[in-house]
Image 1: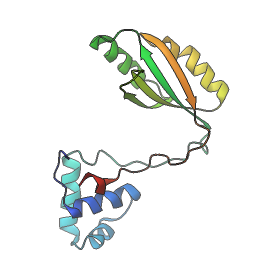
Image 2: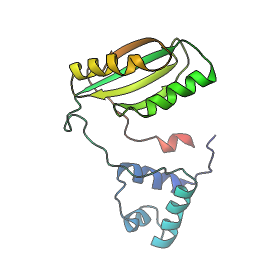
Image 3: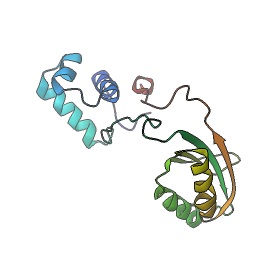
Length: 159
C-alpha cells in the first residue's frame, strides 16, 4: 500500500511530471481538467508530502563521456550495523557510484557505477572500491546494451 493516498488526478500529475518536469502548470491543469490554482496546490501537496523529491534533467551518459556502466555486487565481511553504515557512508561520497542498494541473497550491496572507459573503471575499482571498509568480495557485471534504462516509476501500478 502506498504511504500517501493518491487520487487518479495525482497519478496523472505524477506521470506527466516524470515525463516532462518542465511542463507548465497551465498544461498540467488542462490535462487533469482543473484550473491552474487547484492544480498548483495539488502539486505543492505532493512536494510537501515528499512524493515528489525534486526535479532533474535526464542526461545521456555517453554524450558526457561516461561510456561504461557496471553493476558491482559487493559482499562485506562483517554484518554488524556499524560496518554496514560505514560502507554506506563511504559509498555515498563516490561520484562514480550513481546508485547503491542493500540487497538480499548472496551479496550485501549492489552498486551502479559509471566510468569513461574500461581502463577508468579498472582504476576506480582497484584504487577506490576495493579499498572501501570491510569488502570481502566484489563482482563486476558490465552493461553491454541498455534495453530499458530507468526513467520513470509506474505510478498507476501503485493503485
